Structure formats: structure tokens, C-alpha cells
Image (cartoon, rainbow, N blue to C red):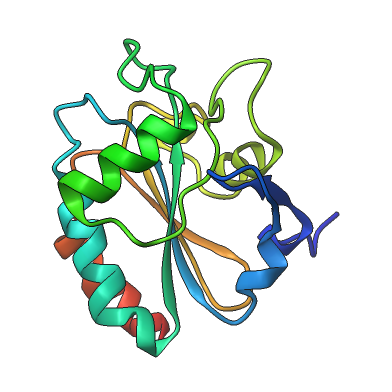
Length: 161
């Protein structure tokens, strides 16, 4: 349907609760597939900074652990949560581990990829820490490569706030 938005989806959080994306209605979101053992893992620090600095203005980071890229997030939800909290002070919402590519792609990610295609029109998520910027109306605005540092996305986020 043409007017589909992320609010039509839900996902399990890292503690096992079902969360409707409609709970984030009106907020600007940065949705990221994360991994605990990746070269980009230090981006958790930048994501947490954005969350802390812009959270009061209507912004949220949503983290979705994924183990599809070279087995870089093999732990269970409890160990992933502990790792993120202890090493990076992460207190933004983290979700249960999902798949972002292939047959088992989570429906939210199927939607995100269709709305904001990657290089040369591909839908496939290339690697950990691919980021999707969503406006306060639930529309996907842009996809960012794993190499895009959270600080480099800040201006785009602030324009939407």
C-alpha cells in the first residue's frame, strides 16, 4: 500500500517484549543493524552521543543486532545487551536479534530496504551498521552506508527535528 509507514510494523525488544513502531510516532529515528564484534562496533559510542544529545528533541536510535555478516554478533540477547551497556553506555532501545537479508528478513527491514535502496538500486543491506533515517511521519528519508559515522548524520537528523 502506498501510504505504508514504519508504524505498520512491530518488533521484539531485547528483553522479549513486542514493541509497535507506532510507539515512536512523531519521533525522528535512526534505525541501525548492529554487531558486537565488528570493525564498526565503536560506532555505538557515536550513536549513544546522538541519542543523548538529541533525545530530548524528539529523536531516537533503534538498534537491531544482526549476526548475518561474518558471525559478528553470535551472542544471545542478554549478552548483547550487557556488552552494549558496559562498553558503550548504550541506553537507546535495542531489539532482539534479526535477519536483514534473505528469506528470514524481518518485515521492518524488508520495508526499510524497499523505501531507501542502496548503491545502484540494490535493496540488500551491505554490512553491519547500515543506517536508515526515518522522519516524524514514519517515512524513510535516507539510507547511510556502514562507513557513515553517526556524527556525520547529525545535520540531516537536526533538519528533521
